[in-house]
Image (cartoon, rainbow, N blue to C red; front, side):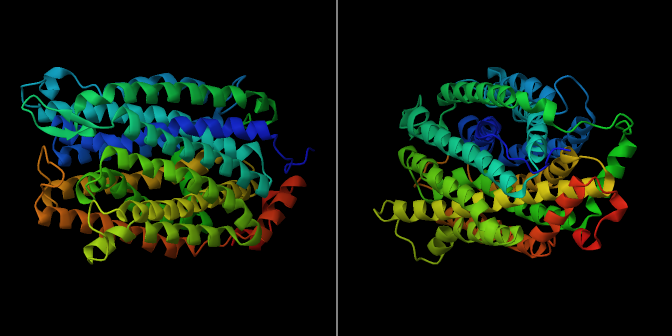
Length: 500
C-alpha cells in the first residue's frame, strides 16, 4: 500500500491554489459592491438588498451539503471532483455579469424611478443562481484539497498556498478595481459630483475583468490537478445512492463527532460577524471615514503581504502549537483589529477625517487583522482535513465533500443572517438616505454606522472563540489515526482517545 502521507509536487499545490482566485474575485464583487451598487447607484432599498442576499446565501447553504455528498459519490473517468470543476466557471461568470446589468426597465434608466420589486426579484434570482454555480466549484475544490494529501504538514502547506493565491489575488483585484476602474469622480446630469463607485455606469469594465479571471483561474486549476485523478480516492461501488435520507443521515453522523460540532458552532458565530462586515465595510469607507477611491484601493494592496504572511506563518505555528491554538490566536487578532479604529473614533481617540495620520493607522489595522484571518483560516481548513481522516477511520468512507460542505452550510446560513441584519440596520437603525453624499450626512447617522460596524458587528466573532477552544483532536491523535489508516485497521479498532 502506498504511503498515505506522500508529499505532493509543488506545482500541484500551485495549480490547486490558482483555483481559489476565481472564488475570491467573485466574492469580492459580491460582498464589496452589490450593496452599494444597488442602493446608492440604482436606488434599491437596503432592506430588499439584504433580503435578496440572505435568500441567495441560504439557498447556497442548502446546496453545499447536497453538492458535497453528490461529489463524494460521483463516478466518472474524471474522478469525483473534476467534473464539477470543469462545469461551473461558465455559468458562474454569466450570472455575475447579469447581477450587475439589470434591465433598464427595472433600474429606471436615466430619468425614471427604479422598480423596487422588479429589481429585488432580478437581484434575488441571479444571486441565487450565481451562488449555486459557485457551490458547484468551491465544495469539490475544497474536498479535492482534503484528499490530495493526508500528510498533516503537507496539507497545511496546500491550504496555505490556496489561501495565498486566493486572498492575495482578491486584494490585488480590489486594488485595481478601486484604483483604476472606479477611481475618480463622476458628474451626474444635474451637475452633482459623486465618487465614481456610486455611478452605475462605471461598473461595466470591472465586471468583465472579474468574469474573465473567474473563467481562466478555475479552468487552469482543473487542468493543473487533472493528472492526480488516478491517485485520488474513489467511492465504493456498493456505497448507498444519494437521497434525502442518506443526506440527513450522513450530515447528522458527521455532527456526532464533537470536534466537528465545535468547529461548526464556532464558524456559525464567526460568519455572522463576517456577513455584517461584508455589507457595511464599503459604507464605512465611504461615509464614516470619508475616503476617496484612490485611498480605498490601498487597503487591498496592503492586505497582500499580510495575507501571505499569515498563510505562510500558519503551518509554521501548527508545527509548534496545536491547530486550535493557532485558530484562536488568529481569530482573536482579527476580531480586535478589524474594528479597533472604529471603536477609537467613537471614543474620540482617532485623528480627524482627512488627517495625514488617518490612513497609516487604518492600513496598519487592516494588515494586522488580515494576518490573523489568514492564519486562522488555514488552521481551520487543516482541522477539517484531519477530521476527514478521523471520519474515514470510523466509517471506512472518504467524505471530504460532506465535511467541507456541511461547514459551508452552517457558515453561510449565519453569514446570510449577517447580511440581512446589516441591510435592515442601514434602513432602520442607521437610516442611510438614498444618494447620500460623503461629508454631508447627519452626525447621528455616522455615529450609528460606527456602532453597528464596530462593537455590535464583532460580538459574535468573539463568542465563537469559546467553541474553538473546545476542539480536542490533537496532533498526536491525528498521527495515530494515520498510522491506523496505513495498516487498513478496522473502524472498531480505533483508539478511543482519537475520537475524543
